[in-house]
Structure formats: C-alpha cells, structure tokens
Amino acid sequence: MPDAQTVTEVKHWTDRLFSFRVTRPQTLRFRSGEFVMIGLLDDRGKPLLRAYSIASPAWDEELEFYSIKVPDGPLTSRLQHIEVGDEIILRPKPVGTLVIDALLPGKRVWFLATGTGIAPFASLMREPETYEKFEEVIMMHTCRTVEELEYGRKLVEDLVNDPLIGEMVEGKLKYYPTTTREEFHHMGRITDNLSSGKVFEDLGIAPMDAEDDRAMVCGSLAFNKDVMAVLESFGLREGANSEPREYVVEKAFVGDGI
Ligand code: FAD
Ligand code: A2P
Image (cartoon, rainbow, N blue to C red):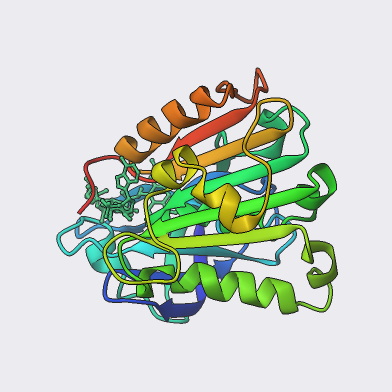
C-alpha cells in the first residue's frame, strides 16, 4: 500500500471519540497546526481519504490524530476499529491556515475550539514556538459533556507535568474548558463567554483587544461563523498565510455535525 504508516497506539475516550498514533514518514515536515489526508483502502482497494489535523507537535517522532466516530461515516465507521500494528494511509502533504506564521505578532494567543476542533491546538499547545512568540496562551475548549473534554484535559495535565516542556508552559498556558449540556465548574458557549466577558473575569485577565490579542478558531461551520463575528466585534481581522492578521480559522469538519 503506498503511503502506509503503522499504528503504534490507540485510545478510546468515549463511544464517539478516540485518538491514535502512527509512525511518521522520515521525509514529512509540517508546521504545528496543519492537517493532512489520511485513510484506509475501501472494499474495492481504493484509498478512502479524509482531512485530519495533526494533533502532535512538529518535533514529535510519531504523528497523533484525534478522531470522531461517525456510526455510518464511510471512513470512521472503519477507522474506529484500528489496532496497534495495523496500517493506515497518510498522504505526506501538510497544509492549513492554523499556523503561527499566519498571525501578526502579539502578546496573547487564543485557541478557540469545539469538539474535535481541539486537534490542531493539541499540536500548537505542545509547540515551543507558541510560547516563544506569545506571552500568554489561552485554550478555550467547549463540548456538550464532561467526558468529551477528557482528551484535552489530560493533554494539558501531561504538558504542565512534562519535565522538558512544563517549565516553558508554566504560568503561560491558561486552560478554560466548558460544557454546554452537563453540569461542570465552568459552563457556556465560547461565543457567550467571550461576549459577556465571563472568561476574562474568571481568568482575571484584560478583555480582548486587537492590539495585543491573536486568535485561532477550529470548530463546526456554525461555531466558526459565530466566533468570527465576536472576534470582529473586538476589532480582530481574519488573516491567512499570505496575509497575516489578528485571527485565522479552519473547519473541524464539513457538514452539520452529528
Ligand atoms: P464523513 O462523510 O466525512 O462525515 C459524515 C458527517 O459526520 C459529516 O457530514 C459531519 O456532519 C459529521 N462529522 C464529520 N467529522 C466530524 C467531526 N470531527 N466532529 C463532528 N462531526 C463530524 N475529523 C476528526 O475527527 N479529527 C480531525 O482532526 C479532523 N480534522 C479535519 C480537518 C479539516 C481541514 C477538515 C475539512 C475536516 C477534518 N475532520 C476531522 C473531519 C474528517 O475529515 C471526516 O469528516 C471525519 O473523519 C468523518 O469521516 P467519515 O468518512 O466517517 O464521515
Ligand atoms: P450547545 O450545546 O449549546 O449547542 P456539537 O456537538 O453540536 O458539534 O457542539 C459542540 C459544542 O459547540 C457544544 O458545546 C455546542 O454548544 C457548541 N456550539 C455549537 N454550535 C455553536 C455556535 N454556533 N456557537 C458557539 N458554540 C456552539
């Protein structure tokens, strides 16, 4: 199979979410935050590929992915059954807008994600360049339930306790997870917590302003659209690789969600 990589680890977080690690092609270079096409061969032996954010940082020897399980999804109905030693297809052509280079320099960077949209930020939170470029990194992640936050919570916990990266992250990374449909210590949609100022109060930080704040957004189409309006209300403007500005956006998936 061309572009085959071997699965080295699989973790199931909920009945709808799992993460896995695969070997990294020696020639693959990417910028933390980018995505690639991965997949499996279909019944007729043809590659069935989908876009996936690389959840591991650029320095990692392996590649990590964080995935939804769509019950009747052409790819994930099968991908969810992969085991250590299995092979997946990985096209080594990384692309994407959620890269530090697409932002103008600033003091704080906000990572705004719902659901599996945390994947590119799982990469960027573990990327030293993020902490070299910004004084503060604020990770807002919102899911319906507490168990859906667990992948991100564990990642942040491991990062803070890491003997090498922990020191770099200490005092700089602020993690603000919320739920919307189950009781939790912090609740509410990202859009509402930004608009009302609740997140600034809870974290004891200054409100967002276009001079110092930068943002990266990854969620459903509806979420992205609504967050963009909130960011624009604070004076931030959308940028791109070719034209860095105050914020960048990428879809976590195409469609209405499940
Ligand atoms: P599809 O036919 O592709 O999707 C069926 C339906 O499931 C979609 O119409 C949509 O309503 C819903 N859906 C698909 N993906 C999601 C999701 N992630 N969360 C909630 N609902 C969803 N998926 C990941 O799980 N992890 C990633 O890191 C990731 N990165 C992506 C990056 C980009 C730039 C894009 C465009 C998509 C990304 N996706 C990611 C979505 C992914 O490409 C597939 O859609 C997903 O793996 C489901 O594939 P499928 O063939 O099983 O079902
Ligand atoms: P809510 O429960 O209020 O819909 P989903 O599972 O539907 O993809 O949603 C993931 C999370 O994103 C949920 O907590 C959901 O909140 C939130 N969300 C969905 N749509 C939006 C939106 N347009 N703006 C802000 N948050 C959203």
